[in-house]
Length: 223
Ligand code: HEM
Image 1 (cartoon, protein in one colour):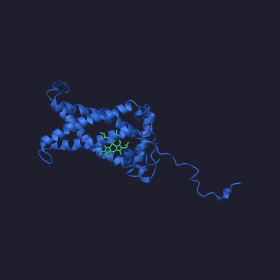
Image 2: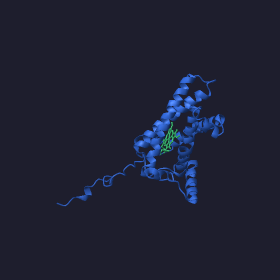
Image 3: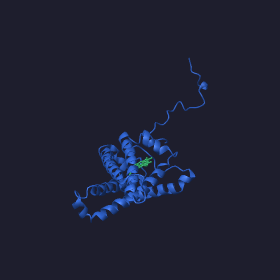
Image 4: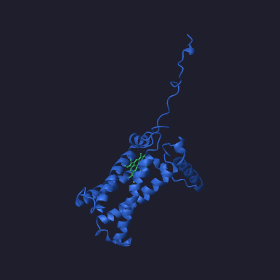
């Protein structure tokens, strides 16, 4: 018996399966990121207490130092989840830099124009997120500098000040305790601004909550 095609529903949405959501943040990255964020905020708060103990007295100085040290070692250990995950999986492509300076400049300019102007007019981001290339050129370069230089320098300066006797030769090699302390504090100030800007940029997805949800579920919220 012939099928009466005139009886088909008006919508053809049932014919085409919806686009599958992209899996962009694998579990190790999500575990690393949220432990790292929690650790960093704790380090910033206890760091403020240690540095400004003459003006702030929320935590007793000894407790602030002890908490700062324990959390710092946990954050250092956790860092290797991020490092090894990217070093030993094909997801490292996310962090491959654009080596063609002209292409990099054009892409970065387009992204800056989007953040400074296009986003307010409801335009789409010029960068198309895919699992092996999820970062726009500005995210990619910022995360590389932060994760491969700034964070490790902060770890090293912190370790040197944690046990000045044991690391005396390292401290002298870089110019003394005042130098190590100044670098640690300058990077601490950088991180306070980084966390604020990073959290603000995190809210610039399809919806303010999109990138945050993606970092919890792993899946891109909106294509
Ligand atoms: C309260 C603190 C934080 C919040 C709310 C937050 C939020 C987010 C969000 C929403 C993303 C996904 C969007 C994106 O890829 O840009 C992300 C990714 C990322 N965040 Fe954070 N973050 C925080 C702290 C930090 C800190 C302290 C660092 C480093 C010092 C950091 C480094 C990164 C990196 C490297 C990525 C990309 C991860 C990857 O896929 O490899 N975040 N963050």
